[in-house]
Image (cartoon, rainbow, N blue to C red):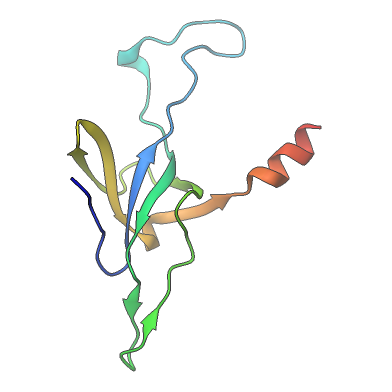
Length: 104
């Protein structure tokens, strides 16, 4: 099955967090919070502005994003848990190149 979001909605796969703390303590599943970071899998064409013109989205497929704890609607496609959310629920895009430079 393929899925194409409509308007300004995006399809996101959560990126799972580490199962251990930096100190080596293992976090049980019941104590973990849902990750607030994800990867954009599909994007809609965009929303229409007041003039009826299509406004393209700022996020693209493959972007790593941060979103609110209660953002989106959870769905299951092909056995995989995914989220559908509006672009306005996205707090920001994580720039992987910048993160790699800071780590080096």
